[in-house]
Length: 351
Image (cartoon, rainbow, N blue to C red; front, side):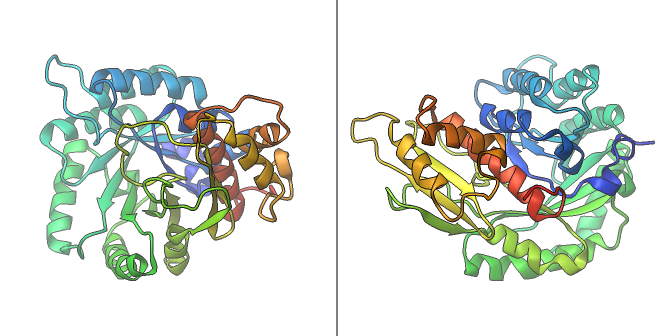
C-alpha cells in the first residue's frame, strides 16, 4: 500500500494549494482546522534564501513544527540552485528528515529534470511511496509522442508508475480574460494527454494574484477576480482536482522593502484587497484595514470563528493585538483562503 492510499487521499483529498515554503504559509497550515488535514495536500515550492542546504533544513523544521496530523504534503525544490560543494542534496535531505518524523512528503518531478534531480526524486519516492508529476501547461500544446517518451524515461528512472503519481497541470499566471482564453484550450489539450494514462489524481493549477498590490487603490476595498477558479470551473466536466497559488503570485518576488499594511481576503469569485500607505506611521494602518474588513458585506457569516486568520483580523479590528508585519498578514490571509476554498469545494461544512 502506498503512502497516498494509506492516508486515504484517493477518497478524500480535493484541494492542492501550491504554497511558498515560507514561515507565513507554514503558520497558516499550523493553524488549519484539524478536520481539513485529510482533504488538503499542500504542494510546497521551497524558495531560495540562504543557500539550498540551509533552505532545505529550515523548510523541514517548519514542516515538522506546523503540519497537522494526517496531512500529506508534496515538495518541489526546483527553485533552489544546485549545491556547489559537498554531497548533500536539498530534496534528499528533506525526504530523509520528514521520513524520520513520519511525515508523508511526495517529491515533485518535472519532465525536464536532470539525471541528478531524478536520482533525488527516486530516493524520496522510495521513502514516501509516490510522487507528483508537475507539467508546465502554459506555453504550448503537448507533443504527445515527445511527452510520452520523456514521461516513460522519467518514470523508469524514479521507479514509479503513473498509478503511483498525481499529475499537476500548471497553467501558471492567469490574471485576465485574455489569459483565460489562452489557457483553457492549452489545458484541455493537456487533459486529453493525461487520459492516455492512469493517474492517482489529475490536478489543474493556476495563479491569479498580481506580484504585489502596488496598483491596487489605497484606503478602500478593491476586488481582484479569481481567474484561477474560473479556469477550473470551465474544466469540471473532466473530473479534475483544484489547485491554486493561495493568495500569492506564482513567481518568487524579488527581495525589497517590506510592503505597507495590506490584507488579501478571499471571497466567492474574487479577492478583496485592502492596503494603506505608511505616511510615516509604520504599520498602524493595519488597524483601519481590519476594522473596514470586519464591517464589510464580504466578511464571513461565521466572523472570527471562520478561521484562525479571521480571528487574528478581528483582534486587530478591536485593537487587542499588535500590528504584525508582512509575514503575519500573509499568514492571516492564507489561513482564511485555505478554509474558504475548502468550504467552496465542499470539503467541509464550515459556513
